[in-house]
Structures are given as structure tokens and as C-alpha cells.
Image (cartoon, rainbow, N blue to C red; front, side, top):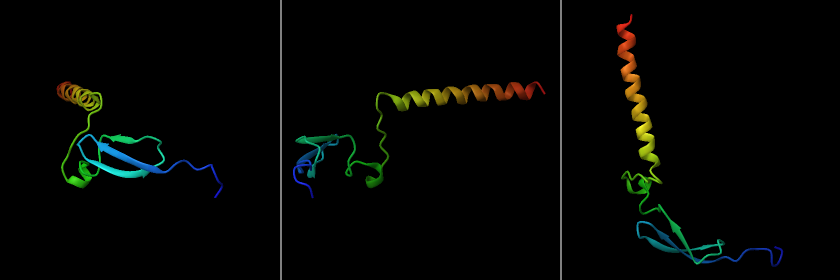
Length: 83
């Protein structure tokens, strides 16, 4: 290995939004890392569904999807009546 080219590999405190904390090692260069989802609150590991909504994106998608579904349902009877 070449000397003086590798980043420092230090202990880092990881804090999740659920309140879970643990210490790991990283080259990130900070004293702490903030997470939104960790292994204690991730749906895959817990078996529960939790939706992480960032800036209302899920709600906007549901509104757009709901609008398209209603418009398509309205158009179907009209085309059936015209035949």
C-alpha cells in the first residue's frame, strides 16, 4: 500500500430518525451520520409497512393516479353508449 494516500478510517456514530443509535467505522470524515431508515425500522426487517413520504411525493402521485382512474371510468360508459 502506498503511504499517505488512504483516507482516515474513524469511529462514527450513526443516528436514525426512529431514535436508534450505533457506532460503526467510516471514511466519511464526520463525527455522526443521520439516517431516515435503519435495520430496526425498515419494513423488510420489521415486517410492517411504513411509507416514507419526502415532500408529499406519495400524496401527489396518489392524486394524479386517482384523477386518471376517475377520468378513464367516466370515458368508458360514454363509449359504450355511443355504440
